[in-house]
Image 1 (cartoon, one colour):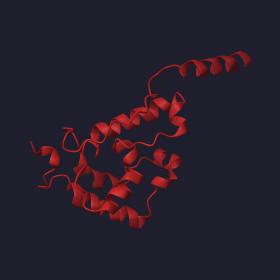
Image 2 (cartoon, one colour):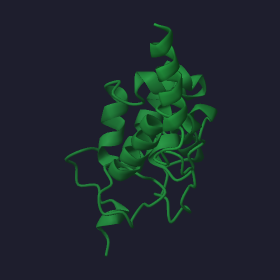
Image 3 (spheres, one colour):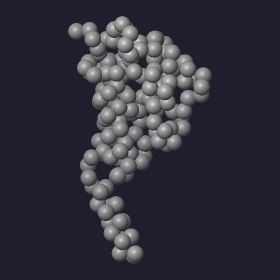
Image 4 (cartoon, helix red, strand yellow):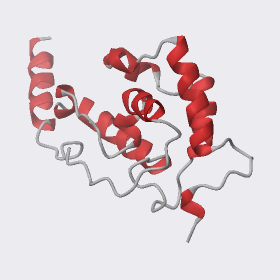
Length: 151
């Protein structure tokens, strides 16, 4: 048992040298959507901005492998699907799905909320954000034109 614990500690120390997940440089904000109100932007950045913008606040534990790998992957995936800091530039930006995912409880993910209590919205704030997202991005299937479609 003692050898097993020593081996675990050695592995834990060694994986700290794997560089994946250690680059916490946020790219510059290129452009943002035309928010319907400053309040929508504020609520969005509080609840969603760490993964869906270039304004990620990297927590201390994002420097410790293997947690750093998961955090980094989640941020990169979030930005790939929906990134308000590359609005109109990034070809794939699913803004029209944001309100629906928030309303259905799919976003923000529960593990994120456990570690980021400031991202928890009151029912009133959640309703305000959903309505603001609909006004800002439209809804899936409507005729709302996103800035990304303009060339």
